[in-house]
Image (cartoon, rainbow, N blue to C red):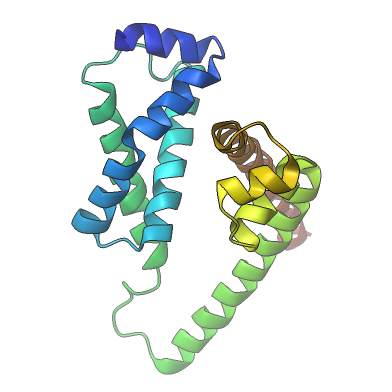
Length: 194
């Protein structure tokens, strides 16, 4: 099928096309991320899923109007940026030169506080997300169940439906989390000013 038609269908809400893209490139992308970027399998899967979500958002919000390359190439580009973004976040404190031990401990404590705050924000976001998304994501990420196990537990028709719903849930959770994080940061700024 023509890639312009695929983009238009996704823009108009056709989730089958998005699921088709997800399945068509998943194993190849995960293998590429593992080999070329030294990702662990779980990390590669997360980066791939975030890349698919970004692709979906770019299509639906109008950022991607016309493809100047193959869809697969565009997706590779997104994934590559997500890897670099992940590595930057992972190493944000490693770039300091001449930092003494006390400063490192303070940074470590600050990082732990920030992680704890982000976990609390994520918990609030999951609550606001509600079911069935909350249950599905908890079963997948916290309990490590496969799509087939989740399908059986929740009672969906097939694994493809479960994966499709998981992708939609991640998009919604990401939006809620960003909104909650923004609200949290605004409150922090107000407290600092007061």
